[in-house]
Each structure stands twice: as structure tokens, then as C-alpha cells.
Amino acid sequence: MRTYRELFAIPEFPALFATVSAQVAAGTVSGIALATLVYGATGSPLLSALSMFGSSFAQVVGALTLLSAADRLPARTALAGLAAFTGLGTALMAVPGLPVAAVLAVVLAQGLAASVGGGVRYGLLAEILPADGYLLGRSLLNMSVGAMQIAGFAAGGALLAATSPSVVLLIGAALCLVGALTARFGLSRRPPRATGRASVRATWAGNRRLLSDPARRAVYIGLWVPNGLIVGCEALFVPFSPTAAGALFVAAALGMLAGDAFAGRALPRRWRRPLTTPVQLLLAAPYLLFAATPALPVALLLVAVASVGYCGSLLLQDRLVELTPDDLRGQSLGLHSAGMFTMQATGATVAGVVAQYLSPAHAMVAMACASIAVSAALARPLRRTPAPAPALASSG
Image 1 (cartoon, rainbow, N blue to C red):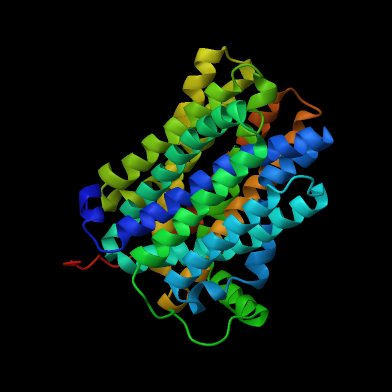
Image 2 (cartoon, helix red, strand yellow):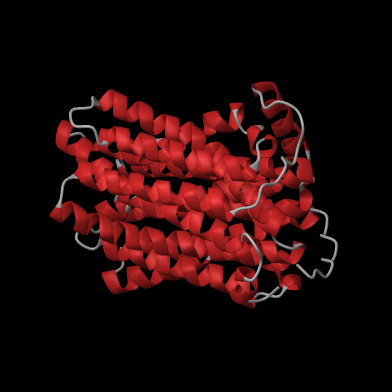
């Protein structure tokens, strides 16, 4: 499978694509509105940031307690229900005068739900696509996420200039409802991939089973740590250049989109394994040049080139699917997703602490050095992971 047209010809993929796109758009629009609302009510940058990104910390709790549900719930019901739950929570946060503590509680509840949603979503993706189509499908979903984030931030800013944060939150809630309806009526009814009752014990047992295998453990570390550290670099764009941070974020998004397109469309299967470590090193190496505090045009180029390296996570996700048994596929991908968001939030926090003692540019260099060290240490373990069996031809 080599083209995006082939993807959209597969039943259910268009509905899953539309569901994911609607939810990302809703989260982006709602996030900027919520941060604005909380900052206006409290004047606290910390609480404003927590309202926008605090759900990422909740995902680690979900990964430890709820992830077994990703394989034990019918995918259509779970995706529609989670989108509806997120929409109701977003609408609740639009209620005038709602205490900030209640707002943050809703944000954390949404983060817990999202930890299951990632596993359901990407487990279903692996189920509806043929074996050789997962990387292409995931690359297209990643590109949709990037595009929806760019559009969502732009639309959210314009809407906030024209209306109030509460109105924008209601628009975000409506987008969640669109995602819920699309999932309910666009996806087929499928049985769960695993039997038994979802529980904390089942989640822990599944996580132990996933992480006990050295090959999968190396892949998880490669998915979580190097990327999370570079997200810490991106978290310093505002202090690095307060007037041009938006341009730096756009450069990062464009680089990521280019990398996803390259990995999904142009990279032959035989090159996925050899190029995994080089592209992860590419993700960090350009940030080393921030030691010279580059001018804005050079900084934009460095950020765009570095962000192409995010495609390394696609290559590792493809390998993770190959290394995971079917009955744990949703939990495996949910563990990746929850760990990724948690490490991103951790990386941003660590970068902020480092920047208290160094300049933002030199803090970026420090985070990049740490990312390079981890990727280099993983090079040998990743080379030792079992080679995937050749994909069988599929008529699907």
C-alpha cells in the first residue's frame, strides 16, 4: 500500500480519519480558549499552562489503571462515547463562574479518558488496514493532527478576538459531538480484541507483559524519551523569541508534516529499520547550533529540519505493531500514546527548569544533547530487535 487514495478506498478509514480530525480540532480550539479563560480569571501562567497541557500528566495515571479497556471495549462504542464525554466536559467548562479547581478537575478527567482513547483509536487503525498499510495510515493521521492544530490555533485565536472564551469552548464541544456522531454512524460494529473484564489488575498484567520483552521495551523508550526531550526545546520557543514564537511553531509543524509524508509515502520498507536511529538523531542535532543563538531565519530553518526527524516515531510505531500480539494491540498503542504525552509534558517542564539557570538557547542545546545521548544508547538494542516478517499481500 503506497498511496493515500488507497487508504480512503478502505471501508471505515474515512470515518476514522474524520473522527480523529474533529477531535484534534476540538482539542486545539478548546485548549487555547481554556488557557485564555483561566489566565483571565487567575492571572497565573502556571494555571493557564496546566489548563491547556495538564491532561497529559493524567494520561500516565490512565496508562497504569485503565488501559486494559482499550482491547476490551467495542471500538465504535468506545470512540463515540469518549468523544461525547469530552464534548460534555468541554461544554461544562464553558459555564460562567465555574471555579478553576473544577475546571482543572474536568481537564484531568478528560486526560484519563484520552489515555484509553489513543489505544482504541490506533488499535482500530491497525485492525482495519492491511499489514503493510499501518505506517502509511498513521502518517496520514499524524499529518491531519498537524494540519488541524495549525488551523485550530489560527481559528481559535480569530474566534477569541470576535467572541468570548466560553463561546469558543462551546464550539469545541460541538466539534466533539461531530466526532462522536461520525464514529457512531461511520464505523462498523466490531467485537473487542480481548476477552475478560477491564480492570486495574488486567492493565498492570498487560503492561508487565508488554514491557517485559526487551525488544518492545527498547522501542517504547525510543518512542517516549528522545521526542519528549525535543518537545522541551519547543516549549522554549516563546522565551527564545517572544515576537516570533508562532513562526517557530509553524516551522516545526511543517517539518513534521514533511517527515511524515516522507516516511509514509517515499521510504521503502527495507530502509525503515536502518534509518530509525539516524532520523532520531536528526530530530535533535540541529538544536545544537542554537548554542550560537542564531538569527530568526536560521532558527526557523534549523527547527524545520529538526522536526523532519519526528518521522522516526512512525518507524518505531510500525515496529511496535509488528512486535505486539493482537490481543494487546490496543493497550500497546495506548501505552505508547500515554507515555508520549507524559514525556512531552515532562520534557517541557524540565526544559523550563533548565532555562531558569541557562539562556533559552543554551537550555535547548542541553535538551538536544540529552536526546542524542538516549538515541545513541538505543541504537544497538534497536538493531537487535527481531526483524519483521515480510508483509503478506492483501486485497483489503
